Structures are given as structure tokens and as C-alpha cells.
Image (cartoon, rainbow, N blue to C red; front, side):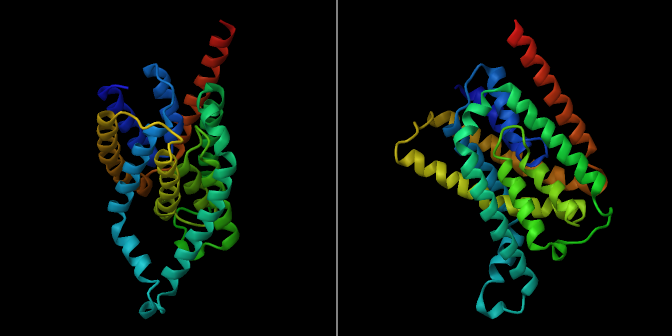
Length: 270
């Protein structure tokens, strides 16, 4: 992999990690267009960069939630409850993601499965908008444990290529009674621990020698491109969801997924 390819992959990761259109699916397509096979070790650096972007952007929220756990802040029950809900959802996500992880690399090499993942993302976004309780639904105080478990399950399912983590969790949050903006913010906060765990697992595999380290320069360049683009993508999505519905993202992923299925069929016949 050369530096230009690393920049392209970093920008794709940073932009699509937070927009509800699936970063893994877009990376799989980008690898194919660049004539490369998916490099999961290189993607550790890309995911680490977007994780740092999330932590920087939501640093005030993270500090508030962590501070609520101190004994002197026992009266901050809403924040403590939100921390507990994030832990529950992360546990559900982690179990499902681990169960599916042995199949991820093979599925990423299949344009049929990636296309189906994009179509599933479109369905989830459409259902979330159609069945959302109202435009002015409430905040995270509305969330109950079963709903949080459902959100966590969809986040775990998003380990599959083409299935958007942010799109799945935003749609599930809206179905659970959150406003679109609150669902997006909860999706980002929920993403921090699961992405951290995924990066930590992959980093341990690298250190143990289970995977080969990628080239240093492309990794650094991809890391920077992914982090900067990711930070800007967070701001963009939060701005979009304040004023616009998610149907445009649903239409995009539906068209992309359908096109991939058609192209894969044509190439298979050829």
C-alpha cells in the first residue's frame, strides 16, 4: 500500500465511520477499487484515529459522565444511569461482535454480502424514520433496559460489512423514543467503548504476532487522514440531523447496495 492509497482509505474511514452509511462497507469497496485486499491490521490505525476524534469531540460529555461516578457526585443519578445503560449496550454489542468476528474478513471480500449490508442499513434508517415517535421526542431519560439491549444488538450486528454502526444505533434510538439529534449523540457516546475494545483487541493481536504490522508511513498518513476527517464528519452529521431526516442516507445506501448486487451478478456470469 502506498501513501496515496493510505490517504484515500483514511478519508473514507473518517467520513463513513460517523455518517450512517457504513465505514466497513465503504472500505471494502475502496479496497476493491484500489486493487487491494482488505488489510485489517492497517484498519486498526484508522479505527484508533476515529476513536480519538470521538473522544476529543465529546470530551465534555465523557468528563461529565466519568465525574458522576465519583462518590461525591452520588446525586447525579441521570448521568450514572446513562453510564449504566452504555455499559449494558456495550456488553450486548461485544458478545454479538465476537460471535460474528470470525466471518467478517471473508464477508468483506464478497461484494454480494457487502451489498446486502448496505441494503439492510437503508431498511433500518427508513424504519427508524417512519416509526419514530415524533420529531420532538425526548432525551436519554426515556431509554429503558430492553430498548438499550436492542440498540446494543444492532451495534454488534454492525461489525458486518455494509451495516452502518451509527445508522443502526441512531435508528434504534429513534424507535426507543429519542429525538433524531439525541439518538445521534447517544450513538456516538455508545460507539466510544465498543470501538475502544475493538482497537484494543486488534492491538493485542498485533503485539502477540498474530497479525503482521503494516508499513509505518502509510499507517501514520492513514491515521492522520482518518482522524481529521472523522472529527469533521461528527460535526457534519450532528448539524444534518438537527434539520433533515435520514431518508437521503437510506436512499444512498439502498442504491449503492443494489448496484453492488447487480455488478456482482454480472461479473459472476462473465
